[in-house]
Image (cartoon, rainbow, N blue to C red):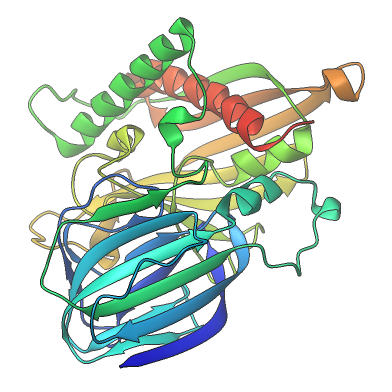
Length: 369
């Protein structure tokens, strides 16, 4: 028995989703190992995220349901399997709305095999100037296969793309490793305060402003895209997902990302951002609001999140292009984070210094000027 469907989906914040056919039903999932293709909360989750290389735009998706395990297909760069239990069946769809593709009918235990190709090309294309990109050309393909199967651990069957091997991206210098370690420690300290754990600092209510600057090698227009969407995070955005004043996006916590400790350790913790000012490619400002589950909620979802502070903080990136020609182009970037707890000032100085250095590494990996 084989049922196949093919369609195009619009990805949002580097993802589309697999969920129960009944939107009110959650999925039950085992623990996951770190990988770049499939992500989900452990235990009970609203959906499984399939991670694309492109931040937005369209991808080709084929779903196939089998009666038994199919052979592993060739010509795919990344392949991950995960088990899932659903109540009514499974569908594949867009993160916020529309674009539903059937996968399997009927509740039960299933094995999912997610295969992808073209993610590296899509990720590199995100850093191109807008007028250099053929936005109508779809470069990413995904195959979602499913069959009845008892629960089993997640497996990474193939990891041939550059995105699937983050540890191999760039060899860090001793100073870069030191900065990364300090930034991760700062994230843990902030998260401990949010969780109100033993050792947490008492926040006085006084606020401060953080300013960090760096000169980065590369074109301003490409760095603008990285910072406008806060590279290195993943999440959801308001319908459409386009960069526009008033648009929102949410940075979601993942256990396998050390820097996400900055949100605290509670399930469903998030950071909500709203774009306030946009002047391409020199300036973008947004709110940054820490969210955590309300006290007493046993199985929190996004709807159970409440702000940690009464007012959101404000995050601004200003970019000035310099250099003496295309071969020596640099971009001066200034990060300003206002309204943050005074006790977190030094932690955030270290964190944003790390994010600036990390942006230069991401740029070097994805684009050759």
